[in-house]
Length: 115
Length: 114
Image (cartoon, rainbow over all chains, first blue to last red; front, side, top):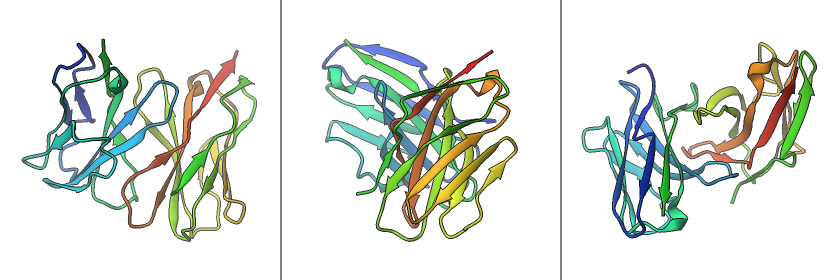
């Protein structure tokens, strides 16, 4: 696609529920990143995929958060037993490779609200 | 751990004027990258400009330029001839060589007054 697509754009869920957030990167981009942006803050790194594997998941806050990228393109961020503190904008980005030559292309994010 | 600090939560400038946004960072690395991203209300982070630490020359992209002071660990963004479309949140970000993650500052909200 022309850009990084994230769905849904907005998601409201009840505390304790399970949610999945989807990221469709730019075609051919091998590197994919997830960030979380709380209100009034800069984005915080969650996880980085190179191809199908998670090369760095050091930013995942706890074991309720998990992400997959089974075919090396689309990625899903999964949050179990959601808490009100999980409310944030979840941003996905992709890049051609692991170099910083081109920078990342970000999507418009999914705004998650846990009520 | 690396940190990025943007000390100006909000800035405003008259249309067509010049404005400078400040950013400082803390790292013990010698080789790294620095970025400025723009985030309009659409939420998409848009790359404005990037700087490689080993390059002494300041990066420039049209109306956007940086003042990179490596010894002072300072990386400010200058926007010349400000336009209404420049209004947005601006984030400074750091990434060390060999790592993939970006470390962002807390952002500066830029308002352009017509």
